[in-house]
Amino acid sequence: MEKAVRQEYNAPALEKGLDILELLASVAGPMSKKQIAETVGRSVGEIFRVLSVLTRRGYVTFHEESGKYEFSMQMFNVANQYPPQSQLLNVAKPLMKELSEKVNQSCHISWYDSQHLVVIGREESPYKMGFSLKIGAKLDVCSSGSGIVLLSFCDSQKREKIFKQSGATENEMLQAKSQIEQTKKLGYFIGPSPQISGIMNISVPIFSGLDFLAVLTVPYVTLDSDAVHHAVDSIETTKNELLEICRTISCQLTPGV
Image (cartoon, rainbow, N blue to C red; front, side, top):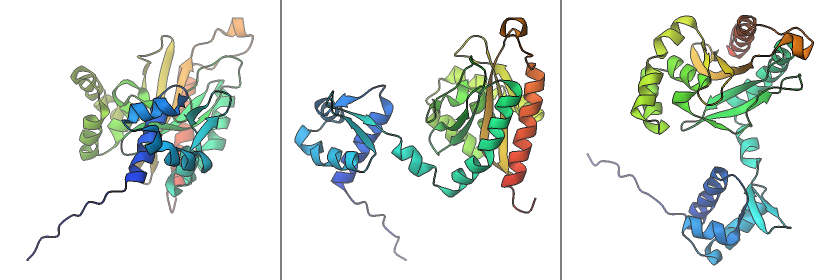
């Protein structure tokens, strides 16, 4: 019996477009046409038409005053139309707003897209001070509360794949692995942010049925109630409110519940 041979096809224009999008998504600011061409290893002439189409379709923003190009939010908008993610945000957003108003803290929801743990929704703290992440931010799987929850509640095969793709050091992976059993036992993660002093990450999983779906996190900022002139919910109260919100979201996303 003949084995099926996988045939690979080349689509040069598509390759150029993907190279440009991946580059612009990874840099902090706009780039000129020349800078883009040099970075992706092509000539300006090779990328000119592809860049024009990406701009016309809204995936890249062109700044006339500087003559530079920047990654737009169009890709994120398209991704949000993907049914499971769209349904998740439709259910979660009003409850996230309710949570933030209750505890005077910001919160964000993150989703693993087969390669990165990405923030897909957020709610700002109603108070004048707080800490929040940008939508589209990529989180360190082994060095974030959201990442520890992801690793704790996905299946073992997927966990190993995530570790391989994480780019984390051996020590970072060992540290993450040491927190998995406790996180599974508690049903949530709580611990200091390794990147920012004074922030305590509280992260809770969201499920659809028995399947892990996403993580909702409150980066808890300790406020002095005397200084801010209003009551401040404790980290324990905030954790309990977050757990309740995630139970509600999971129930609404579970068919037949």
